[in-house]
Image (cartoon, rainbow over all chains, first blue to last red; front, side):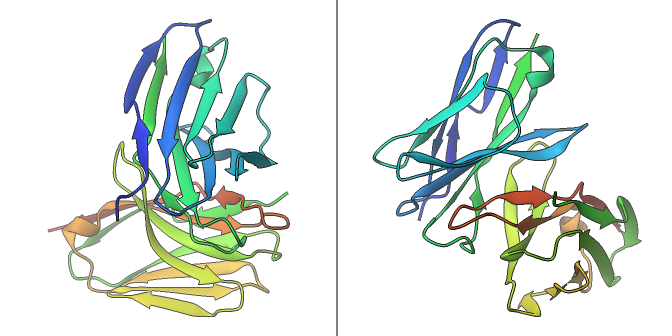
Length: 114
Length: 114
């Protein structure tokens, strides 16, 4: 069974631009969560989607948004990029039907904002 | 607000040694706890998942325990090998309803020397 895939793996953008990251969950998984990892803040929860609906949200500004498609693939968008948005963005998928379902992570997208 | 702490922050041991990594959390209302491994610049690999009703889980040379009432978990690695060198992260799932939300510790960086 294929794991969680994320594209692209690396991105370089400049301040003020916007960016879209993509995540394809494990086949059969309905939940996709997004996390930001930085050296200073560690891993922080952005949001979770289940069946095309945002089910949970972390404490990030409105510049961070996401969506999920009917095939459970998810995209995350960051508008008006700031230097502090440079990070490894990880997505995780799970069956999603129960809170206790195990989370499986993708390899991440490394975003560098210049 | 859930807070997760991992001690020690870094650990260096000679090959063959048994070791224990510690994780503590402030809110005992969790659904489960996962231990992950992260290699430099990579995504997270799930090692063990302990549901809130369980006391421990084992996989090969790894054993994780959970004491929910005291807010503690330990990851025991037997007969360490150089390939075990990585950062180990614990994460507690304290979502609401059916929504998952993982709160991560800052990790323990492990180096196993020859």
